[in-house]
Length: 196
Image 1 (cartoon, rainbow, N blue to C red):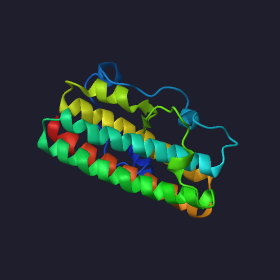
Image 2 (tube, one colour):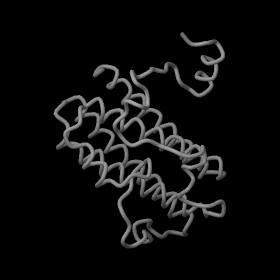
Image 3 (tube, rainbow, N blue to C red):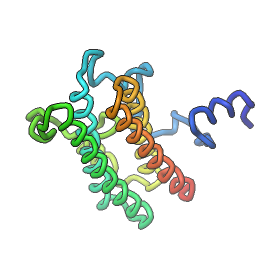
Image 4 (cartoon, one colour):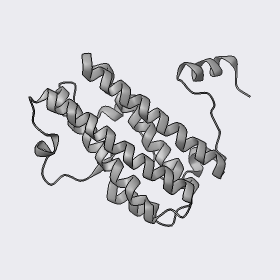
């Protein structure tokens, strides 16, 4: 049972319910986030320009799209497959949104033209796509859903941090992206609840 104070904190954070997984973090077999609350901002310093934030967001969205699309071969569950296919399509839309923002910051340059050469494909959470796909081989659907929830949580948190650093239309874009990541979280959590 939660205290009223805990319930109020959860409500303020936009969460309706919190579930305690048996064994907690000690039972988790996947990757975990570590470090101080600002660790998600480690990709760039305080002097990062808005176009750098947009490029990073584009790379994370592109990596997440690759991950969700690549999960088709790992998932046997039809509901999970369909959800991941829908999430891959949503990431494409996010890429387009961020690419447009980047063009505005750079007077028309395409983000794809300015990407660093020799870069690793990374996804939300800062994880290499290839490593995440390899990790997913042979995993239970619930474990993969928990992993995807962790990724989307990282993205939600990062976009809220970016939103606070920007203003005007850019601020609105990152706030909208954060809200969409929150919807992804809700869909993943709903399916996970059915699987456990």
